[in-house]
Image (cartoon, rainbow, N blue to C red; front, side, top):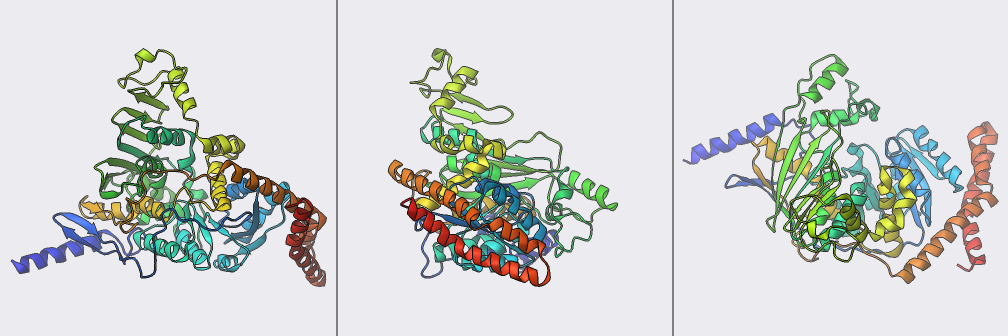
Length: 552
């Protein structure tokens, strides 16, 4: 009997090793798990001594947020443009592996009248940037492979970080950033812009107000066929990309699991109070074979790929501690209309975003509005256009009211600008951020957890408790706000600071001096650089003098 058990365990281990090549980043070597009655139990490491949880973490207010960007290829440049429009921000550093891409972003600062930023480049350029004492926030928009090492280095150098999605690629990285945030008391923010889309934010307000009753099931997805983008992603010279696949297609070929879950998962997790009274406990995942992915690689390289680990369509079912269910889908390969699903099923109503934004409700959610035909409302059909409009008007989200229209022209319907503005708002006021390091870990963990499930015949897999026992301390998801008086004081200062920065930039003739350093050669270049350096050193003095004159 004992020998049979040993043989079975050995075969199980060998089968797992044979299925998943060692190169896959979606599986981390440090993850510990064991079988329990047919379920893979993923162990939660103990919290290191001296650390405390960071739920509701606050830091000292930062009246002027000094930001540095790392990764200026596809997403980064748009972020620079947005931050040029946010008052009370100073862009001090621009970093990319390729110097020309970082340098190109200076045009946005110049157009906005802001001071030039320092340029960093090369494989380790971010290290010098992170060591600067005058950086408050490092904003990371690189390829996925570099999200974690840069975030880790920045936090080790006492910086707040904001990281594009997916922010971490496996559980080992999840725990590393959790421990750093708990140890340093620095924010680790996931840049999940879909949590700030109009429909999702209004639905969140409705969910909090009980419009849908108890939300018992939700769906989310990232369904976005990317064939026109694959060749436009960066090609990392250190990634052994012999077939010229570029980083994202190569990552999909080498990794199994839901690699891009956060657009679909983030908004529904907030509606379901994950880490604020509930938590995910178990998942089961399955995927299709790779058909479209393999075909793309074959057509691109002229040869059949020996392996392609990411299935064309991945489906993950998750259950919470409170007995609720979430379904998440991932498909970037097959031709379908863009779809994030976003469906909420409640005991009194239902919300769905795609293909059209609809609501079906029972009860009195429309009382106090001008909605017509109140007697016709029931949960067996969607609200008509007038009723839906009345419901959306009733639940106008204050964050959208404050920022959405200002950023509408900056892409994605304004949700990117709303996200960035909220991040700055919370930092300026010393408030908890809308998403913390535990949210980052929970939403990104699907990559490894779903791969574990699929590599073991779609077995049930337990979630580790990223909060290590504190998921039920806070009751209900909320956004934090300063008082109106505090907001008025900070907004006045932020506007004055940005105006002072622009005025000082002109007074010091910074852009002319900057151009001189680029155009001069030989001894003239050395002299031009010295002159520019002296002017940059005087920038903060000039700004403070201008603010003093304006009584700030």
